[in-house]
Amino acid sequence: MSNAFEPLPDFIQLAQHAFASQGYAPSGPVLNATAKGLARLHVPATTAQRASHVSFDEMLKRCADA
Image (cartoon, rainbow, N blue to C red):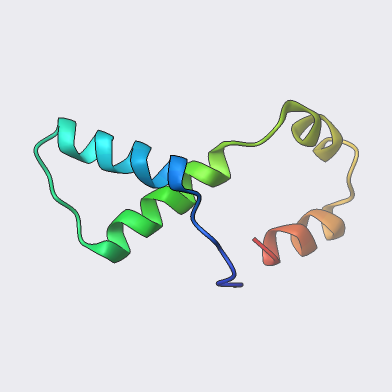
């Protein structure tokens, strides 16, 4: 799995706010992992529509690069 993720400040701030609202102060790696998860959830609708027309092998290749 590639580790080339560059966390966007907006996602890190959102993660910090979410943790703070629950009274939790996460460590750096937990915060970065959460920001990475939020970034993956932020997918344009056009990408999701194109995914339905992709072969299984192509989808596996895309997932391997995530």
